[in-house]
Image 1 (tube, rainbow, N blue to C red):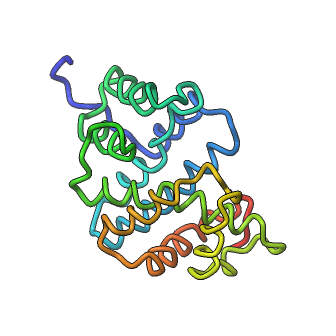
Image 2 (tube, one colour; image 1 turned 45 degrees about the vertical axis):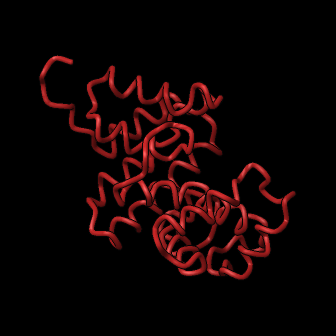
Image 3 (tube, one colour; image 1 turned 120 degrees about the vertical axis):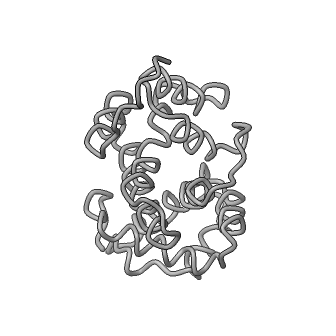
Length: 193
């Protein structure tokens, strides 16, 4: 490291980084959903909305190229460090993986873990509705879908439950917050607000 300040990471430069490593429309939509959910969390916890959004947008930027637990999110951390981005961003992103060895101690880290799987699950719940409307998503419906192990089977139900617990919030209330946070980007997710 040169001792120079970390390069300024804007939403535009974060998007450029995301799309340099990610071409899958599904993964890009997930990044946008987590970004929106993180912006919502920042308003609740008094975080920097832009920074929290960038953490959400970039949390899986390396996943398409490096999908194994041995690689993701560690390769992403390496890339961020090589490009001179600060250790705070690196650790915040690493914290979303249970196996990364980075403890979730700050609200931004707990929030990222809490919204990552839930954002994807809520999106999946809305996509199977005839209307594809987020307005039709409620906590009871999400809980019912969580019990259906065949539905969105790649989504960790334990991470959804543990994420709300780590934030110290009721899961039903957390679902409602994330649903509301996704509404501004509904069209980008292939949904209706």
